[in-house]
Image 1 (tube, rainbow, N blue to C red):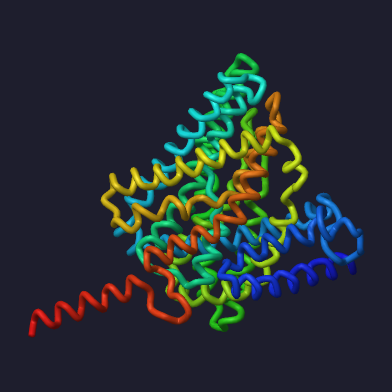
Image 2 (tube, helix red, strand yellow):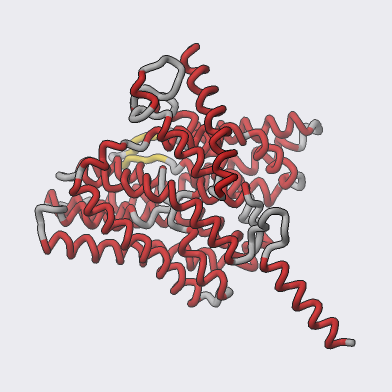
Length: 433
């Protein structure tokens, strides 16, 4: 117990100090936390085996997975706050269309690239693994995106659409992965299971939505019995912990394996709560401040989980580079095409795709499922490699895109969007005179 407390406190303090250094060189705090995790993880400082100083092994990092799960629950709950009715009325159709199309286009682009690689040299990657990786490519990490938005107080149409799309992406990714993995399994076994391909993923989404709606309404009802701000915040925190715990349950009914999506359950809970509770805006802000240290630890642990041994395998690096190149192409082109189709503003068309590049937890979960394939280990290693690259580079790219779109203020100055509005207002005023 003593070592656990020392390890967590050491990680938190070092991570915060690293964020100060990152700020001076213009890097997002998320990147600093991930680098901290790498430095104090099993492959650097952890090799010294000093009790309470860093993570000494991947097994020790895995022991802290409950912190990561809880942090993801709060992150999804906060993203639910973006689905307020007035936003859904103005951007709901765009968000759904963009969320679905960019994910499908990314899967198709990566599938084509890796399937061609398979036919050029079948020994490099199997057809089943190529198809599975294409589906995993659709997944986007909401955590890093939300942290960048919070740190720089980004605000505007691109930010609103981005947060909606990364939330929708989870549901779309589940279906795309289930279909592709079902086809991949059929290719290896010669038999296809409708239950695993269609029934189980659809039931997971339905059950997650039902649990989220119920939790959100019950939370709203119970909030009315408390008038103290601290008690209302404590109740909200308790409900996020409850929904996170419930979403980890799995069970079998008549041969069908059923479970929940943690991100989807907590996101729906947040969405229902923010649309039914009058005090939700203030409570969301208070919960966000309470969970700040938890989010720091989440990214540090995520950095420590990255297995640097994969960098010694040339085959993983080769396929990983192809995967990253074509996934990036798919996300950027998919977002541009879908934004163009839904008549989004030009700034959104240009910059949304880059902000969708980060990839982490959901993709790793899919890779773990793909371990049952004949060369499932290489799928996991390729995803690990891509996560290493995307999580270190993605937050910075997201920041730059939001700056370019004029939705982040720099050094206390007004954003370029606000400057343009002021110029337009001045021109209109002069014309009236």
